[in-house]
Length: 135
Image (cartoon, rainbow, N blue to C red; front, top):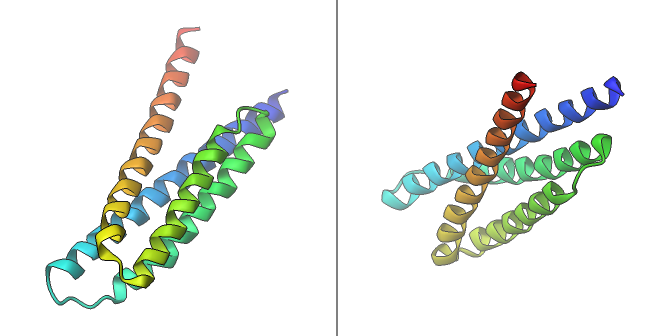
C-alpha cells in the first residue's frame, strides 16, 4: 500500500512540475510575442520557444497519464492535458499561417488556463497537506 501511495504522490509531483513548465513556456512565448509586436525585434526567440511550449504541453499529457495510472484516480487531468495539446496545435498552426489576430488571443487564453490549472493543483496540494496535519 505504501508503494502505491508513494507512486501516486510522485506522479502528482511530476504533474505539477509539468504544468509549471508549460505555464512558464507559455509566459515566455507571450513575452517574446510582445517584443515582436512592439518593435522590430528578431523573431528567433519566439520561433525557438514554439517547439519548447509544444513539448511542455506533450509533457503535461504524459504526466497526466502517469499520475492517473498508479493511484487509479480520475482521468480528468488527462482530458485537460489533451485539451491543452489541441489548443497548442491550433496555436502553432495559427502562428505558422501568420494569423496574428487569432494567434495572440489564443495565447492569452492558454496562459490563463494554464495558470488556473497550476493554481488549482497547488491549492489542492495545500488543502491535502493541511488535512493530513489536522488528523
